[in-house]
Image (cartoon, rainbow, N blue to C red; front, side, top):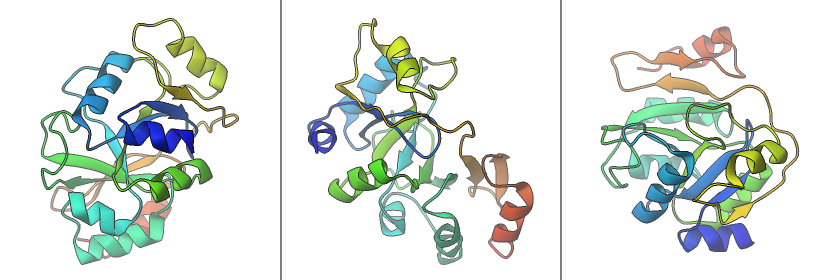
Length: 197
């Protein structure tokens, strides 16, 4: 798959996800991370999220307790991003120099193929210029990225994206905190979080 080869070579790929269109790169490649900051005109202090292949990969890069891993088994793959303290194994620019990182296993066939064939986590961010609405169609992607200085190496048409972003749960405090609602209701998340400390 060309997208896999490009990611392994430090390239930038735009394609579908289980929410809106995304911009993807090797999260362990500092130059690739810098490319996406430039492409999106994103402030340096704003971190990127990361897609991982499985919970074992998540635990390689973040501090995930057994209880929290059991919670992840119930919501991944899916549109739930979870924030943990990281193990400082990825470029500091990726995390905006913060000690936390947002991780997710997406529920999308294209991304599942990418993750299965890459031995690194994948930087993920919405396909847009910073401060603008995320692209939900390939036409919106092209409108954002066609006539700018920095270009993605590949843009993949995956049909129309979905309206709702992922839910976000912050596990870095004393108790789990739902910081953004997404495709899962608060009641569903509360039920899933019951007993997780």
